[in-house]
Image 1 (tube, one colour):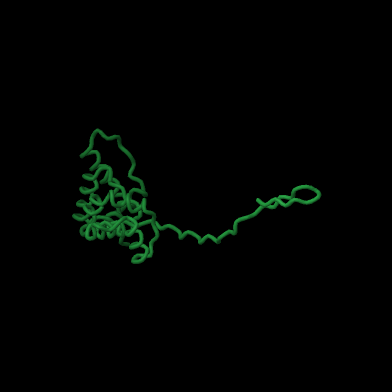
Image 2: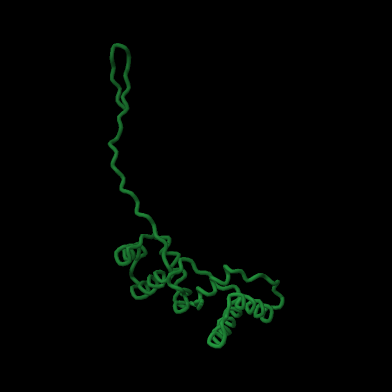
Length: 163
């Protein structure tokens, strides 16, 4: 602040610092599971790379902007991601384990065994899932296998409807 004295008394001038134009922050991206797996593989092959270097690698090679925290969280899951690498749908952005993996596996086997012989409807898949749940986990309260559950099941196992 500058003070200038005049006959009427002091006059105060506020001195403002010159403002620099801030460059806009690039929009952050969400990593797909296939990119998370690629990141884990790349880190495994290049152990000396820092998380900051991995952020730059994603930006340069995959044109994806993420935070260092995203890198850290992904690397913490690397063992899990690399173990499930073959079964993950690469376009998925979030990944959750199936609550009853044995029911899911039995249902997939059932679909694979019968899809060539009969036309399996979504309703049949839901009914069979309920039967497998009751048989494999009799103490679990019954719940409805919804159309949302069916869509996720079909997506998870690349099951297509044929008309």
